Image (tube, rainbow, N blue to C red; front, side, top):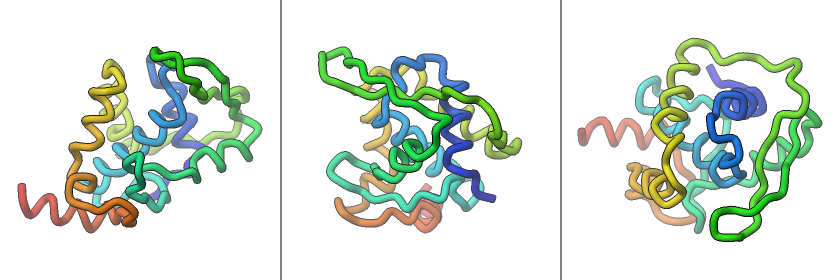
Length: 155
């Protein structure tokens, strides 16, 4: 069963221990990792995102667009470690959200815990080391469920 994207983002934001590191790019990649792990373990993504392998790896503007339309979220402009601008996602109104079920929660919590202390370079290298990114071409749609089946046959 898929989870509403905004509910998923709210859960991540509320449970991510380093909230000042939760930029749009990191959030995007976290959701990708969550969907990838779910595809491997449960043969389905948690989100309804149609992932694309673009020049920034797995990234879709759909996440930001959907959050901007929801007045329960806000974006705080700040700078990263290197002085470049970044936008941090915040939950400003914590009402009417649906919690993940236990199966979803287990995967989301696993990805949060596995990546929470990674600096950007290690984090992005983890994303780029996943099977869909290593064995797909830029510009391709990433069918994570199909790719998980291929991955499981090889491992």
